[in-house]
Length: 227
Length: 227
DNA sequence: TTAAAATGATAGTAATACTATTATATTTGC
DNA sequence: GCAAATATAATAGTATTACTATCATTTTAA
Image (cartoon, each protein chain N blue to C red):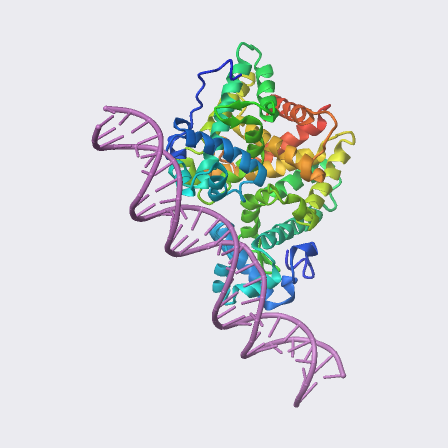
């Protein structure tokens, strides 16, 4: 896909960085290696000091790109949803059936990229894992309203919005598209996590796409019910 | 209800405390005021130092009851699910229809208590709010397997288990009761939060119980589908 | 070529999440 | 009622975190 979209530039709200990291070598190193380190350590144990040591730059230089490690995480996850929207557009183009488009959208959220795919210095596979375990934590905070104003969730909202419209093509009277979709997207990420760590909270199956199928069924049932 | 169940003692795994807080005055103060402070400050900005200053005891004394602030949060949320299971048992007793029992179970997760209800030093209303915004964060961590072994999620799993059985009464062939329920419970908490802070990610209605109705419908549709 | 901008090197700060030690209350068993 | 055991208070200390500040040096752009 990097071959197909060579001039792709994912948009991220400018409240999510101090200097656009893609404008310099150091910026790109910050992106690439922060994704690596957060995947490995988890966000909590990740620090700018460790990142600085790893890439051979002082902490202070990283702070010129991102004012806090929270801002960096917002940036990465926002980039992820921007990237997901691109994929969504591509993968649903030229499909007339809204049901099929919805199915593809749900499958997309659960599908990870090839393990070695790197777009714009971003290791997609690792960023997907970060999103699964960290994204929900970014809004469940006391200062969510501030983060929201800085644009932390714009790309996610836009993604949800786009899929909502597909739902309303299927059933124009359906009243809960956003509610249904966030239930599905957040639920889907959670089931992946439960499957690995808390199996009694899910129903893991041998087929690789049981989660996708479950949520596609859930969506279609709800959309077509007379709620 | 405190009148109905005067001898109620909620069980919490003994990996979630160092000394049972209900065995002493100080312990009870820790529980009561930590619930207050976490509600007010959010868990991140809550510290044992602040709590100690507030209740007039040194930090070190609190550490004898809970080895970390994480352990205290696990304790509180575990207590919450223990309490919820009690309510579940009471509220579904003597109801023969499993569909009605399931409906009551879902409604229960979304219903908050009276604002001034205090059981065993716990302000239920505030603990419900803590659970909404903090519980999901407690498992999405790198050390989830350790916390799990310490019993951090036992009460939640048991609650889910109990409701799962109701689902299987409705449809013995249904394969995904846990997956459906965690989707609903976590989703329900999230929609409450979105309704207050990120309205574009939900579909808030004027009726107070629109979330409950949405999830009850979702559950019944899925359980009766031939998935 | 020069000045502006970015980066590096280094230092410092307040707060966090604890641990350790010793003194003083409080409770319990006899 | 009193000693022994136990719980709590008072105080100090540590490594780490999440930054901020300053100034020298390198890189880049006009």
